[in-house]
Image (cartoon, rainbow, N blue to C red; front, side, top):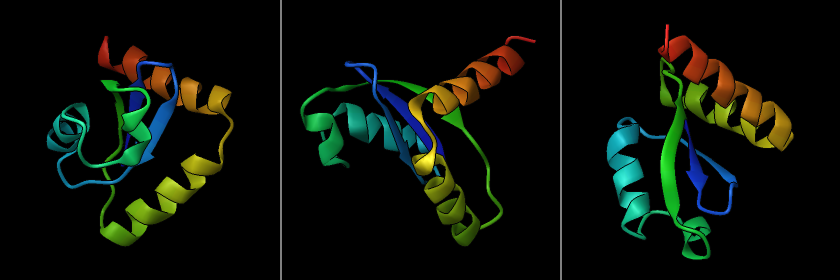
Length: 83
């Protein structure tokens, strides 16, 4: 499960077994219509899941969150990465 920031500041949530490769696809303009209006600029959050079912459940939960809650996930992940 991953979050990508678009150039307009929006966050896109998706699942992939290789988020870095999927992000590259988003940057190239393929993979999701979401990025047609505002290109993908950064892979800002990843979360490992034990299987596809869990990843889909987690994606659904995150998509229901307000943007402010998604931003908290991103902030927590970047704070943990800098430790």
